[in-house]
Image (cartoon, rainbow, N blue to C red):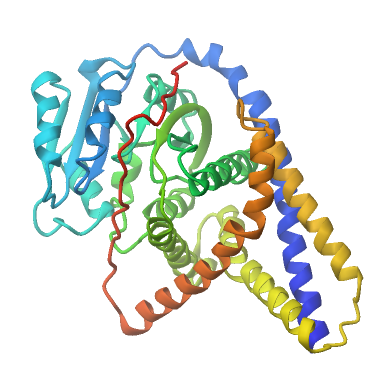
Length: 425
């Protein structure tokens, strides 16, 4: 029995490793080619659509000013721009600080949520803004984001030039990457996610996932879908599946860049990532239960990818770790013997190689310091994810069994003063 479990875990782990090597190659190819279309696309940027930018904000006094400064500098016709700060049940100075910008910039306004949407989370706040806006294109940014000047310009450019695209997804970078060892890990993680999971999947399969920030979607599409799912903790992933099921696609266009803050403490990271994991588990279970009724079969592949990631792969890793530890104290007579050690070393080297190659895409990220952080990350941060996924599965299972109300955790922000700056192109 131990041998069967061990072989199963090895197969699951290696399938994921090889798949990500495949995605890494696709991401690198996308990086080398995506900018080639821009000169031709620029020619169609004449009759521009109206754009509403939704900024959900619940007690965001620490970051809202910096965000609105960046928004006020966006390169887009101001008479076609409607920036909405959605003040959702705020008890701090968010409304006060945001209102100062409304006095100076007529294209910025504050929308305070009202019952029944008040205090119900991000999806409800976005639905409130949708009902109080009329623009042709909807962009969404988290309250801690500082988009580069042409971020919205590039998102709209993508939609104009790709009429079959329901949404355009940009790239996000970590503004506080150098602050702590944790933010350095997250910086590496986000770069890999975007160029492997986003860039690689787009290159090979024409598939990308809407993130929680820095994306644009056509109003006609989001209205046809009935807005955002208020029961989803990962409203972005849930929306992605519904968009694809309509027959549209989502394009990853990394020329549109925003900078966002990431958790600087383990407690904040744990709460945020637990919400993400639970949200994705909710989406997988919601749609896989009825996958035979999905109209677009291409998205089934992506659903199985999420299922593999959050269920099968982590099962393989957990079983492998348990068998390894037990075998240290009690001989399980594993037939694979010393080959297991060689496979583990090879898996580690593959992990190291694919991450470092992916980091080489971003300027100044492939360096000696990050090389050692990736090694350290493998033995610490990556293992923390295993515990977190198990915990999130427990929480989500408990919620489903006892029909508990979905509770939205608002990520704690940190002051960004003296944490460096980024340059617009």
